[in-house]
Image (cartoon, rainbow, N blue to C red; front, top):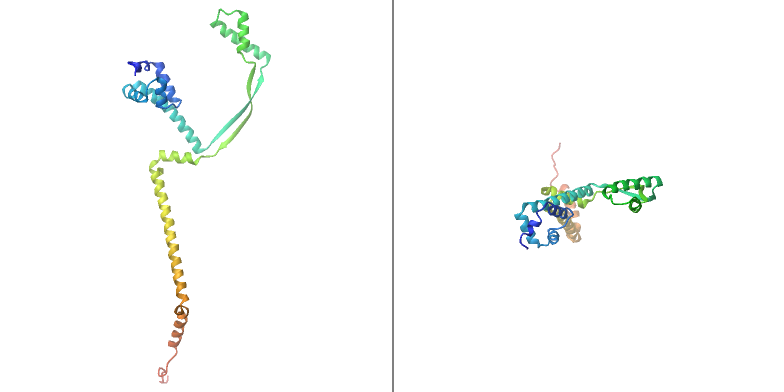
Length: 229
């Protein structure tokens, strides 16, 4: 770094230039390149010289606000207006009035011009066509869920940060796993019942129990009460 180079960039004009680069979205590395220094040198300047640091900060704050505004519009949805223009010739009387006004304004700044030179210059510098709008179209842009998620994760990280989404996904996965375990258990019970029924004991077990109950309900010899009523 040349000795005293930073002083060249502490004038109002140079600071405005740095601020403009930051506002245009240039990175620190690109700004350092434009200044003619290395990026570490620019970092050192930012620490030592508050005017340079403030210029960078002001420029970046402007573009940050612009980006944030655009992000909000994309998240909420917005209306895009497209205007179609047509070039039409300017009426002769209007054109002559424009040229006369141009000559009067420039005659003050250039008194050395002759009348002929002013007339010729006005013909060359005043356009003969003008742009007029002929059609305006408005298109509704739907809300962008990606922009919504990005905004919420940064504005309300305690609710929408990645860990919160991770916990939600884990809870959903556990619920699915529990349903799978329940379905498997029910299938195992059904299979066990079917296997038991396929055995001879299983096929006739229920009938044998019914016959045994009926048999027990029939009085046996010696069980009849002989006492008269």
